[in-house]
Each structure stands twice: as structure tokens, then as C-alpha cells.
Length: 216
Ligand SMILES: [Zn+2]
Image (cartoon, rainbow, N blue to C red; front, top):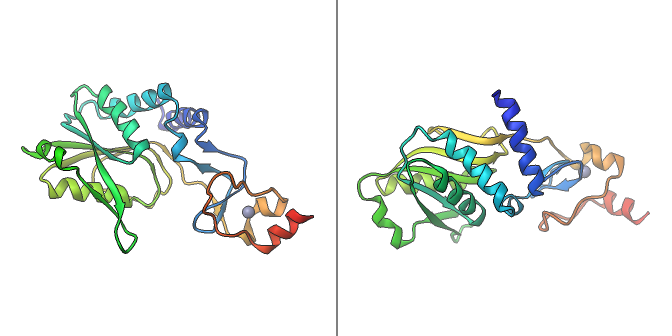
């Protein structure tokens, strides 16, 4: 099937989970405005959909022998479990812990109990849910390399930025970078669409122009 058609089907599934929000008005953490948003916490709330999406990723990497599926974060781990369950190699599923260091930089570390699985240079498939900066996945790649494993691929639900590139094979169910605007150029602001504050709770304060409009 055409990649574009497949992507549209996958996007439809993610839309049905409630994680893909469209025709709305969001303020992104960067301060830019967007009509669409992907709320990653909602992407894995329906087990049947999570399993279906996991199947698609597992099928893509089915020809590749895999020893371990590695993730970090709750949502990615639910998906990673489904991928591992569906992959013909019957890989083991493990996760890394994610925390921020003193400088606010995201760091991943492997629980001590999982170190034994890195004896013998395992082939590792990384699974991520929504990829924005790629910082987490890069951390996982470094972690695997430092432990003597080999990353054979990266599977994910959604890559939000095409600027993020990797040297290992990447498979994403949806590869869509939606348009964002400065508040001055935002078509939703111009039309007076209220900003959705249910999501992105840590948004910066809205411009005074917005507050004035809302008060009217
Ligand atoms: Zn706007």
C-alpha cells in the first residue's frame, strides 16, 4: 500500500484515540500557535488501538531479528510492550528510566536488573510514542551503545519534526510536522478562536490582545 495512504489510516487510528486534536487553537511550549496538537498521554489509552499500532510497527521490523525492545516513559512502554508481543523474534521488553539532571537536561539510565540482557551484544529495537526533539531517543541510542548493544531500528507513532534524523532505520506511523505560527501571524487568533487551555497547561501567558478579545 502507498505510504501516504497507510499514514492516513494510522493517523485516523491515532485520531480515534483522542490524542490527535485538530481544528482547534493551541499555544505550544515554544510560544507559537498551532491548529493541531498531539497529546501523547492519550495515544495509548485504548488497549485495542495500542495493540493494533504495535502490530504495524512489529510487522515493519519483522524481517529483522531483535533481542530487546527498549523504551522509556509510560506511553512508549505500553506501545513497546505491544511491539515486543507481536514481533516474531519474541524479543524481551525492557525500559529505561528518564530523569532531568541539575541542568534540566533529560537523561536515561537502565535499571540495574536489566543489565544482564546486554551480555552478548543484543540487537535492540527502540520504541517511542511521539517524537518532538529526539533528545530522548538519542539518549537511548547512547545508552545501548555504552552497554555494548546494537540499535537495529527505531519505531514510533509520530514524528513531529522532520528535522530530527537518525543513522539507524526509522519507521514512523505518522510523519507529520504541522504548521505553527507566531501569535502575530496566527490565523486562529485573527478569527478570534479561543485558545484551548485544557491541554498544554504550562503554556506561556496569552498575549494581551487575546485577553482583551476574550473579555469582550
Ligand atoms: Zn493563535
